[in-house]
Every structure is written in C-alpha cells, then in structure tokens.
Amino acid sequence: MKTFVEGDGKPKVCDKCTDARKDQPIIGMTILSGLRKTGDNEWSGGEILDPENGKVYKSKMSLADDGNKLNVRGFIGVSLLGRTQTWEREH
Image (cartoon, rainbow, N blue to C red; front, side, top):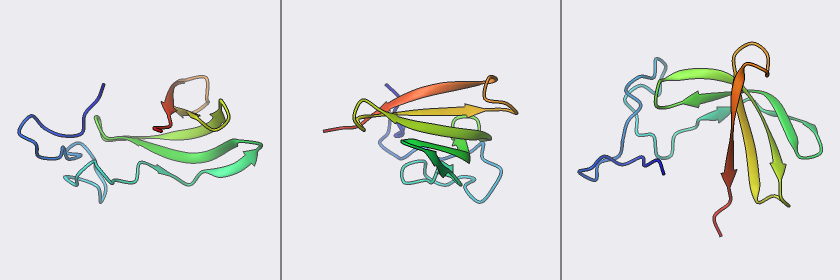
C-alpha cells in the first residue's frame, strides 16, 4: 500500500515535478487532466502525473465492476507502451 505521508506525519510533496506542482503536497493534487468521454464508461485524450517520478504521461481510463473499479492507463506514445492500474472505490 502506498502512502502519501512521511514517517513523521508530514504530507509527501512532489519534489520531482517540473511544473507548478513542484514541491506541492501530493494529497489533494490534480494528477489526471484533459480526459474526454469517448464511449460508454470510457475516457481518453488526457494526461496523468506520476508524483513519484514527476513525469507526465498520456492517459485513458474506463469504469468496470458497476463503477466500483477504475482502470487507469498511463502510456508514452501509443497505449501499448504503458501500464494500467486498477483503482477501487472505498465504501
């Protein structure tokens, strides 16, 4: 499990970001932007920030499992060159 808080309780910051998010707290930070609905439960054309390395990737996402899971894909160039994470809704 990833945590966005340092061992001393202070929020982690995006020290590797190169834009206006540099040295800003990761908690509450906008990491997904520009996505547009492209189908039923699908969005694409956006960008996603990886706050651990400060890099911005192209992104797309889709809802699954009756809206309880969000499959988020970040990639370089074409979607085949990337990685998907599944985010689960907290109840």
